[in-house]
Structure formats: C-alpha cells, structure tokens
Amino acid sequence: MFRFLCFYLPCFFLLTACEQESFLAAVLEQSNFACESTQTIEETIIKEINILRSSSQQCGSDTQPAVRDVTWQTRLYRAANRHSQDMANFDYFSHIGSDSSSVGERTREAGYQWTHVGENIGAGYSGAKAALDAWLASEGHCKNLMSQEFTEIGVACAVRNEENSQYTIYWTMVLATPR
Image (cartoon, one colour):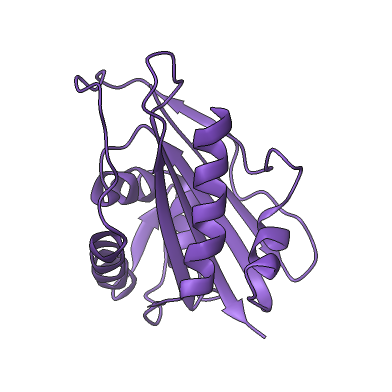
C-alpha cells in the first residue's frame, strides 16, 4: 500500500493542504530497497517539477496557473532527510516527527529561515519520479507543487529494510520561500 500526505504551513499558521490518503497498489516484490542518490533525486525532481510548473496544471477540480521555477536548497534537503530518516527509523507515517517536531521546526533547525513552508510526504514509492507522479495525482500535493508561494525545495528518501516494515521507502519534500 502506498500512502502520502501533504502539509502547508504559511508564516506561523498551521494549515493542512489535504487529508491523509491511502492508495491500493501492487506489492513491491524486492526485499532490499535503496534510495536513488541525492544527486539523482535532485536532478529528477527539479527537472520534472519545473516542467510541470511551466504550464497550468489541473489539481483536483482546480486549475493552477503556471508559476516560476523552483531551485534545490540544501538546507531544505537536510530538513526533508531528517524527517524521512525519522519515519524510516521508527516505521511511522506522519507530518509530525517522533519528537513532535513540525515541518516548520525541522526546517528552522536545518538553518533555513522561511516565510512559507510546506511538506509533502509519501511512502512505498520506489523512485523520485514515482513519488512525484503520486503527489501530482493528489489535489493537495499538486497545489503544493504548483504554489507560487514556494521558490525552493529539498527532497529526501529513506529506507527501512525490515521484513515487517510498514512501507519500506519513505519520502519527504520540503517546499519553502526564504525570508
């Protein structure tokens, strides 16, 4: 089963962009998974998101206009990596960290001062493109991807290679705008 959530935190107010969603999917057949390299994730995500953002997109019942490109931001990657690792280490799926941290707190702790911050999380997707495709198919995630409020992103993946793991692969995308 694949799952994902999206989350949007403008300034200091907490707003959820979508509700938790579940998806039935084929069971992944491999028993040992690995994330793509950070460079591969960065290249894939930046290229694909900026192609999407260059034209209007249908996000659920709403059409989102084309918006400017986003750039990769290492501090946002660090915040995303922290959360993906945490979800994998403790085998859970939530925007709230095992230490009760929020995306805004994790982003500030990574040294990034933001005016807008959002988060998409996913689980079970075998690659960056598959995670991005799933986020695009979800209204709230799509709106995060197409939001003009976000100018920088970081994406990370973490793996839990244990037989009883709930999802095995955990994804986090942090989207933000600097102060």
